[in-house]
Picture (cartoon, rainbow, N blue to C red):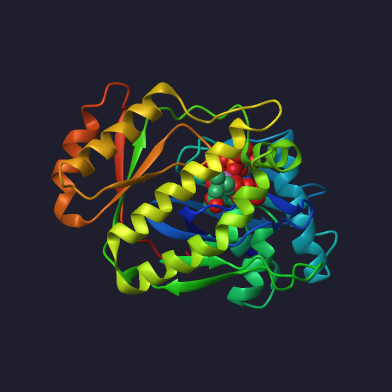
Length: 325
Ligand code: ADP
Ligand code: DP6
Ligand code: CO
């Protein structure tokens, strides 16, 4: 009863921001992402009869408190689905991505955990069922089950049975690049979960955010199909700005941005004015992801690394979905 799985992070081009059901993790809006080959998690789950509770090790350190509880509560769902309520596990996970810093560790982390635990406990291999299960660990993680361009359908059912991800185009559809510009790998003060909850409950801009999604989605899907880089980049950048605007109108207001975040946004706009097509997007954290096509690799790298406050640049290509080791 042991299995190891690997999952990559993903970057949302149309953001998931807000839940209609917090327990089942059902989103307010559809979202769309690109799986990234540069950041991933490997997780081994080993169910042992001798255990009376789960033991969770992240990057070789025993984890307790809220992070342990989140993993254990998720394993409860898997135990229930498998009809094995008393099966406890050793969980060893390694993040090849900064944890809780806005690089989507919850996406690779819960996709790898769900895949390894499902296989270890003997649940049938089924990608759609895995996406539904994974969603209940972290919403964005349901998209990491698949590689390439992925849409998370919000669904309409109260039980979440139609809220799962589907692949729009495989990783080899389009050779895009995403530079993760690392300003800070510190853990964020407002976790994604808490940030979106506060936004849904208090932000006066929230309804406008939700209303803006269908048009963005339709247009970006056409752009992906046509490989229209300007179209995809413009929509992703505008969608990101609209998501972050909702946090400024929350009560109490908050923002994930730092001064260097703004400096990079300005640098990307300047690159564009000089004829280099590049667009930014930002998840729940200060770090910026820059989208571009391979021919501009050198210019993008050289320009971004000269911005004061930039610590590192990690370039990804489109990545694959969950795999077993
Ligand atoms: P991020 O931007 O990294 O996705 P989130 O606020 O969404 O940040 O989630 C961070 C949380 O995800 C961590 O506090 C932890 O509870 C969980 N997490 C991160 N990595 C793993 C992992 N490998 N296995 C299980 N849970 C993880
Ligand atoms: C800004 O999936 O991390 O990155 O479902 O509460 O675990 P939980 O939140 P999470 O939120 C991701 C928010 C985002 C946008 C996105 O990835 O779509
Ligand atoms: Co996350």
